[in-house]
Length: 424
Image 1 (cartoon, rainbow, N blue to C red):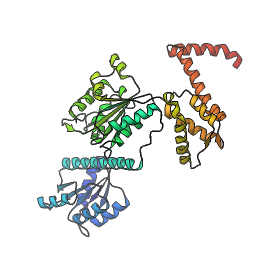
Image 2: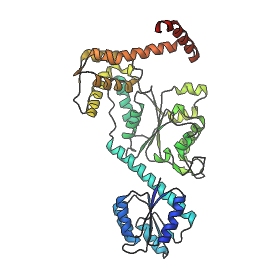
Image 3: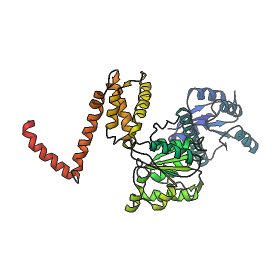
Image 4: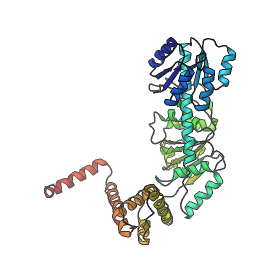
């Protein structure tokens, strides 16, 4: 719930504004002058401040100067019963979000408050993104196999351009990492990289997620929302699992790529966006096109450059480097010295069928670090990695024997009947 501070020396004005805003489900606090306002802002976090100009002890103009020094990101709406155009201009120059005359028009007040809250929300999102960019250096692409060297060379060539890239590869192979390096080495690296997992968002919400929506555009649209395309302006939009996007959303994404303009759901205004799109998928999009699940014209728009990220089974020579990398990384997280790894243990790791790719390998290395003793041995790998892999493969073999879950269930019921007497 958004928290609003009303600052006015007139108690009746404060009470009226508080009743109106509380009716709109805002959390409202009060202060009778500028000095009390500064004290309260230091003690509590407010999303918007409504500030009168003429007050004792410290007036609104002095208060906004202090607020701009201390908390410049809090939107301040100035109100006054003695205001003229010069006062309004001066207030805005000092950093006020807007200026309203007393008594304020109810509709205009509520619209101004909502707009100020949207600005506050955008500032928070921007700071989070900037903090994430500063703190999280993009992880290196580990390995020197021919396939990985090709990926690195392609990134160096393609990243400085604005060409759209389609990254293909199995789950857990590192497609997101490739996308992040394409952004990091581009001219857009000072802008945001915004990720959208198209498979994780329900089809009926994907358009709102990508393009945003206006308040009241559908049942649960209680306020305006900024979409991912707008958030990624001047940066990169990473469409992960793009093969799972609905056909209606595909049509709208195609239009955005053609026109570089979006329209929020329920909106009437076209909004220009400057976004580089990098898409990724674990599906064969040409097969999806043949099935009617993916638009061919969108495929050609996205696939200006196609990059294939190999599975871990296709780059087994990189496993020793990856294991050592994860060993150092994970042990640092746990605050322990990296564990030694026996040469035979490393060979055993290279022989496993890695269906989960890099993600699975990291999990196995973490498991080995936790469960093994001073040094990771071949026996540790067999006990904690190969056995799990074999059980997984055996289960997969069982599933492959049947054309449906109904057939599998019938088989399991018969097996249970066969051994029921023994188990009893």
